Amino acid sequence: MAKNVLIPLPLMDRIIELLGYWDVSKYDIVIQLEHCDITKALNMKKRRLELRDDYAKIIRAKDDDAKDDARIWYLQQKSWLRDDEGMNPF
Image (cartoon, rainbow, N blue to C red; front, top):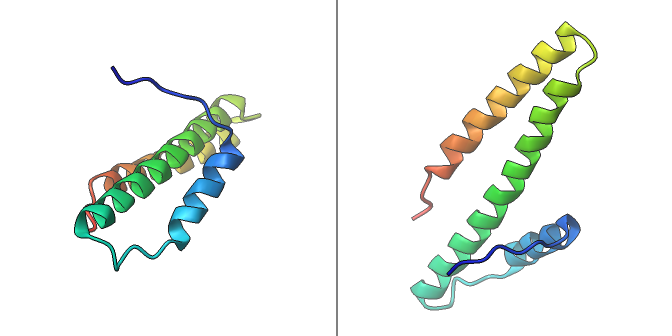
């Protein structure tokens, strides 16, 4: 049974950065694929969290113009995230 855990966002950022520095090209392909999958999953999670913040900006907008701008930005980010989720680096 899979369980979720909560980790502080700064720690997640540090993990993503650390994984980005590791050169796994000399390791077995299985390790390379695992590294890629984990890095991608963490980056996608971070982007989904940012997307939630973008959605909150729509709700907190002070006027209709700000709301429209926030909605356009949110929809653009959501579209890019969906495109990136479908990409396979190998």
